[in-house]
Amino acid sequence: MLVSEATLVIGVDAMGGDYAPEAIIEGAIAAVTEGGGEFQVRLFGDEARIQTLLGDPASTKDISIVHAPDTIGMHESATAAVKTKRDASVVRMLESHRDGEVHGCVGAGNTGAMMAAATLILGRIAGIARPTIGTFFPSERGRVLVVDAGANVDSTPRHLVQFGVMGAVFVGMMLGIERPAVGLLSVGEEESKGNEAVVEAHRLMKNAPFRFVGNVEGRDILKGKADVVVCDGFIGNILLKFAESVPLFLKTKLRHAAGKGLWNRLAVGLASGTLRNIMREWDYQEHGGVPLLGVNGVAIIGHGRSTPKAVRNMIFKAREMIDRRVSEHIAASVRSFQTAAET
Image (cartoon, rainbow, N blue to C red; front, top):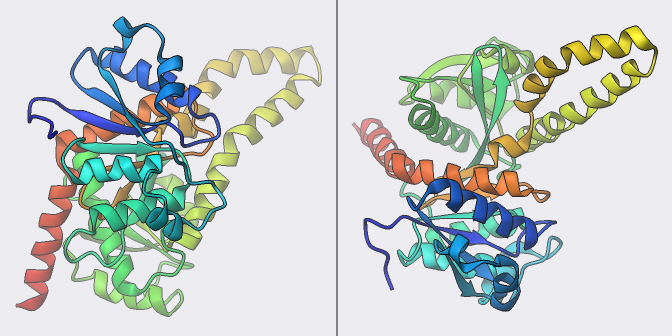
């Protein structure tokens, strides 16, 4: 049955992630409780197990269940599993999105399966060669979107330009930045620097429908030299995994420092509030998940170790992307770019 326009429903893969289904269900309950009836959550997975964990029906009246008895493991071939496991929770969820039964999807399981299922089932936006993942980094000037963050380890210049188009639209819609600055990650600021794909992408980006500020280097990401930093998924995923290690590294160093004497312990204690706020910007739980841009719909991919807090934030990010019609705006921008290129 199709959902009405007045009812916003977000699909959640209850069986995906290291702490599923407990953490997923707890996060879903937190989201609908805070949402206050403004949206509903539909959980996809083992119905009996989910129902047992949901508990009090009064507090979960905005949560429904679709039985999907199968799962796709972290080490399975994503594309093959999506094609053969028709009752997998991630497959049933994305089919429901395609059929209009839910308005957006959230999953923290096999990342490859989520990307493959979204691409195969929802389809790509017309004109987009490859969907991409974008992730936010903190910077001196706010937040920076790095795209691609791991969807495509091999990217052509054309792909990189399209990542820039999608990233600029996403940042503009989600952060309210008019004409976001887009930079191309390279080994030097000069347009001749970089491998062949980057040099050619630089040339193409000069005529792209976004504000291109040229090449940026790794040190420029945290400086906030650009609102969107474009790179291939091989480099982007290395950046992402490095960023994920920063909070734990800082906590370890602070703990060691505090153990070196009373004055050090007092200094760390006095600075703990400020340090906690700084480290929160690096915490994946705060951002929930990353969007898969370029598909006909809304798909948020969460970290495999997603906690209830991360799941709650993924659901709210999906809701925001739905409300702001990000996919529709990306499609319009791509059409405009293609029309301009043909004239």
